[in-house]
Image (cartoon, rainbow, N blue to C red; front, side, top):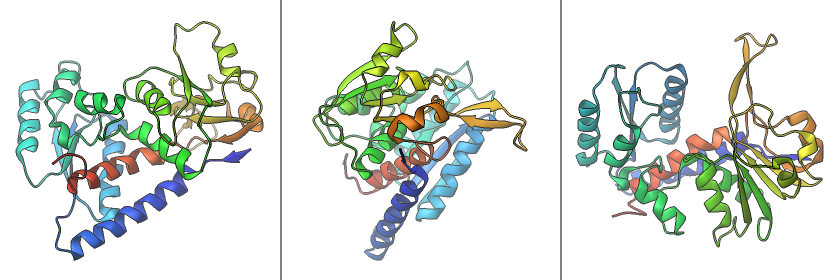
Length: 293
């Protein structure tokens, strides 16, 4: 069993991006600029956005944080999105999800200019991804693909089982794994809460990507010898062994599954660090107008 170290890979990619930003500035180019819109004071969202702002500073990007209270109207938020769409100084921006219940996430996402949609959630980017066309890939699936690439993990002709069908991870990563690409060229099975015989399906898998959000769902008796396991889960569960009173737990029962794997991602330190770095990469591409003019 070998660990896939997302923390180390993410650090390497940040260094690569920082070097490119230095070159862009030296040539008189524009510093990439990422804006983030945060509504309310959700603890998880606060942490994610703070990490994104910090990551921008590390690689030499300009960043802007726009805050709204929980009672912001949908109309006000749409107006903010339109201002950012029109601001030539902002290369890419995100509206941190989830949003309060009175605001339509779909409406906000669709209002974002797809050329600035560095989260990769806009229907144009999702559609282009499904067709194998250049686009901004959503961050977590892009991070998974990059880990497989950097570790030279063979995917061609392999059976990949994706656990979960969310729009953010399950659906896009399943499409990426079946693309004519490297990594890719897999035969893909997507399992979800209505799938029968999940255990039997998982036992056939060469690669399992667990993105259900159910702590320790994937057990040792569901994985065949030599499988590659990518754990996307990050659920806070109570723990009396940590100061915070909780620990971050993946969708994989690591101690049971790891001994059977050829490669496996830990939680934390696996897929998680790759998510923010994928956002940075999209922002760099947006700044360079490398995908959309």
